[in-house]
Every structure is written in C-alpha cells, then in structure tokens.
Length: 287
Image (cartoon, rainbow, N blue to C red; front, top):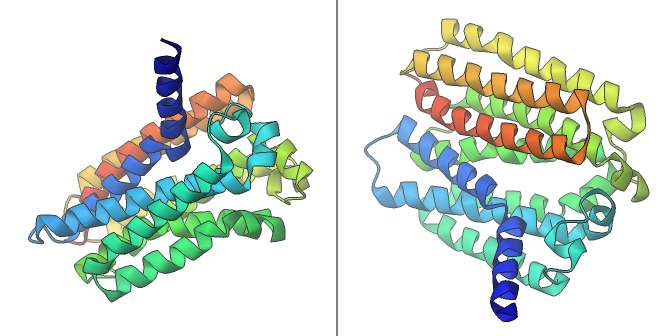
C-alpha cells in the first residue's frame, strides 16, 4: 500500500514539475495559430507544432526549477525539487530529453521553425543565468519566448508577419504577468542577488507597470478591431476582452491579499485567461 502511495506521489510530483496545464495551453495556442492562418495544411503540421510547443514549455519549467532550486526553497518549498519528491539529476535529464524531442519534432516543420526552436531552447536553458545578470532582462526574454509561440505557428504556415499584433499582445500580457510573479518571488530573488522590479523598486511599482500594460492591451483591442482586417473580429474582440477581464481579476485579488492561497488563485485565473486567449487567436488572423 505504501509503495502504491509513493508511486502516486511521484506521478503527482512529475505532473507538477512538467506544468502540464501550461504545456497544454502552449500547444493549443500553436495549433490555433496554424489553424487560423491556413486550414488546408495536413494534420501532421498541426500536431507537430502543438507537440514542439508543449515539449518546450514543459522542458522550460523543468530546467527553470532545476536551476532555481535554492531560491524555490524560500518561495516555493512545496515544489518537487526543493521538497525532495524528485531529484536534481532526474530533472536535468528530463529537461534534456524534452528539449531533444522538441528539436526532433521541429525538423519536419522546416528550417525557420527549427531555427526559432533552437534559439528558444538556448535562451530557456540559460534563463536562470540571465536572471543573475538582470531579472528585468529575464522578464523580457520570457515574454519574447512566450510570444514566439504564435510566431512559430506563423512560420509553419509560411506567413511570418501575419500575426504581429497577437504576438505583441501576448508579449505585453506575459510581461505584465512576469512582473507580478516576481512580487511573490521577491524574497527568494533577493537571496540569490536577482534584481527585479519588485525587489528593486517595490511591489507597488511592479503592480503599477503591470496595470499600465493591462490598460494598454485593453485600449489596443478596439483599435485593432477598427484598423486590422480580421477573419472573425467578434471572436477576437469578445475573447480578448474576457482574457483581460480574467487577468484583471487575478491581479486585483493578489494585490489586495498576497498570501500563498491568493497566489494559487492568481495562477488559476491566469490560466483561465490564457484559455480564452487561445480561442481569441482563431479570430485574429488576417481576413
């Protein structure tokens, strides 16, 4: 009975380490981008794009936890590595395997998607080292890589500049989210000498900048609907608005109460907002 419980605990720890909900949303976003731009492509292109992104984002979470284990002992002691549920060598080899599979899956998609995947992997592997140089630079790198998931889908279709507005939208969205994540992780970042907006200028400044990005995105929605020819403008407008509403609710709740429970609610609302954002992508393709 004890062995069975240990097995279940190991599976739960692995699911947590891989951040499967994040990986699934990333794969869905890549699938949605390809579908929105060209519905005539073979199913293999959809599956490979989604697989590459899911593998990359899971691998990124694993290697980030590997490098940040000391910081997470302060900020996230419940995670699989600082809690001891999984070992550091297991995490390292898992990250290597996932990144390797992502590269293999990207090869049939063509040279440009493969090149983007390779560059992203190098940056993701070294993300924690970039943070030591400057945490704010690290925020920008994460936002760029997350927004590149839309760019990857555009490259697969052969229309690299077709989704520039959604790519920029996702960049600002991710940057705002990263700034608030750093509020929760301020103590651990400070212990490792990582400079972020939250621990350099305070949580209020981080929230101020994040809210500025949220307002910018909300304002951009009607402007984009007016000036950009979209295949399904109402789909984009409706779901993009709900996306920002969910993110706003997450920020408000966490700004009012910065407990661990409030942080978990922040994560839940943000993941819900990403799901709505993926649907909005389907309407953002050029008409």
